[in-house]
Each structure stands twice: as C-alpha cells, then as structure tokens.
Length: 172
Image (tube, rainbow, N blue to C red; front, side, top):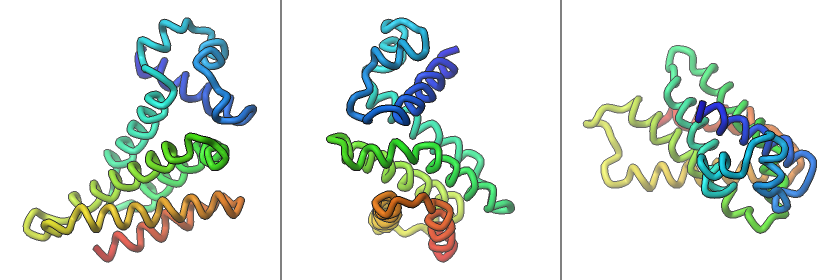
C-alpha cells in the first residue's frame, strides 16, 4: 500500500503542476486532491522535495533494472516516457526558485542511468578507473543541459536527446 500511496501523491502533484505554479503547490493541496490526511503524507515523506526525489529515483531505478541490450529501443522509450511525464514540472521549474533542485534531480537521473549502463556493459578490467566518475558526470551534465535547452526552446524533443545519449553510450 505504501508505494501505491506514494505514487498517488506524485500523480496528484503532476496534475496540480498543470494547473498552478510549481512553487505554489502545498502539502495541503496534495492531501485534498488525494483525499488523504496530512498525517498520511508525512508518514511517507518529509516534504514535497523528498516526494519528488523518491519519484525520480524510483523511475530511474526501474529504467535501469529493465535495461536490455538486445532491445535497447525499449530502454530508450522508457527514458523518453519518464522525461515526458515530468515535462510540465520541468517547464514550470524554469521560473521557479526551485529550478536548481529540479535541475539536480534530472542530472542525478542521467548520472544513475549512465553509471548503470557503463557498469553493465563493461567488465571490471575495462572500467575507466579513476576517470569514471568524471566521464559519467560530464556526460550526465551535458545531457541535463540539453533537457534544459529543449525546455527553454519550448519544445519537448526528449526522444532526440535520449537517442543521442544512447549513441554516445554505445561508443563507451
């Protein structure tokens, strides 16, 4: 039941973000929309930021857990779906005081996915050694910036971004 409640809260948040500014959504708004008590919200999360971190981490982990080299297109499709799901949140965060928080969550998702991809593709002998964290961070930062530029250009071309990421990772 816990994951269902958490997912319901995230879904309600995403619906609310379509209706009002990101910064204006409160726990009260969420619990009213879900018809649950504040106590239930606080049982699962300390605040809205923690809820969003849980959502991003859970979805990124699910993508990484289903990574399939034989059907890479399915992995790409899941990452594009993930980005599209949070598109309005990304857009509204651009004019929000919480932009850096959202930017860092996007970066963390890319970082986790890239790290997972590299560790799954390469054996220990083939790793990057001490440069691995730099390469992963650099690549994640570049693709996070592309997401931000896409949003600033008022497009949602996440498919191209993910395909370019895939192409970049195939060369690693």
